[in-house]
Length: 76
Image (cartoon, rainbow, N blue to C red; front, side):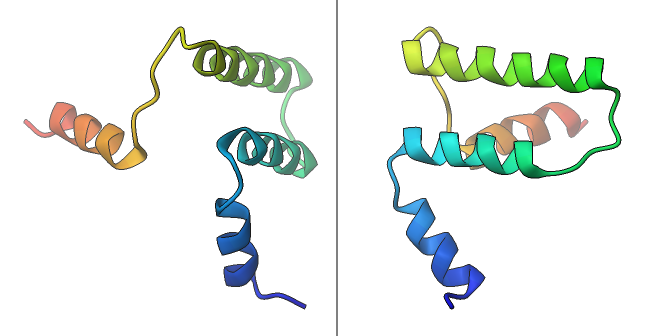
């Protein structure tokens, strides 16, 4: 059996569309004690954002860049 590290490395080498689908499936597999209306709203928002990126309506930025921008906003 492969280790989590090996599996992670293999999965991160997949094309971004495949990784997005996998992330969606993994998130759906988690059990949450969340109000179904709230969960449905989050799923709807995630699909909306995914579609905006796939259509080119918005441009994604790397996570480290996004975090740097947030840190600059929060740092007085």
